[in-house]
Amino acid sequence: MNRKMFRKRALAAVLLGLALLIGLTATPTVLSGDGPPALPDLVPMGLNFNVSVTNRLGGPTLEFPILTANIGGQHFTRPRDPDTQQYLVRQVYQYDLYWYDPDVGDYTGPIDSRRKNTICMIDDGNRGRRVFQCIADRLNPFYTCGGTNGVSRGWADDYFRGLQGQWSFIGDYTGSFMLIATLDPDNDLQRTDIPDSGRDGNPDNNYSMLFFDWDGSTLANVDNVLSFDPGAVCP
Image (cartoon, rainbow, N blue to C red; front, side, top):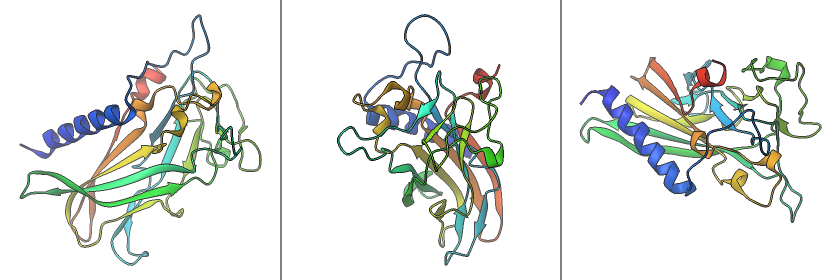
């Protein structure tokens, strides 16, 4: 089998694993219609923007950005724990790096796994992150680190390359790799004791996959696979 087929197998395995982890079948987001308002829907994207392999952390390390976009039916306001009043989603992403083992004929690992501590969740106005203009009904950022945390509809929070924790260590491995970014790894946004504005309406699309090759000196064949269809958001 070629690598493309293995990528499809890996994608299917991730989908199955997430479904089993979440223990539910998500309902597609509805942007309008009768009944209660549709929930927010946070999705990761942009892993392939300005990605690089550096040695500044002591060895070959993949450094990357990530966007957290809200494609749901209402603005997302980061929820607080009803008991402690502390913000939930203390760690916004889990990053797992897998290596393609030619002897096994599949991706193995993870060879590196880490969590990204949440700085804050905001409309990243400094970078113009109204990524889905068709559903963005705010021209300027509303959510900020100094105020209420959250992500407006059509906007995205930007964790840029170089921030603490925005990396995966490659080490001495060379060949083909798969990085999986999982949003809300503790499933805080699936709690039922938080407001609807702080819930994630579709946890099935809370991951993004980055495939790449590294031969020890050159980064190549970078391919970001999304868990949602951007064309369905803005036809």
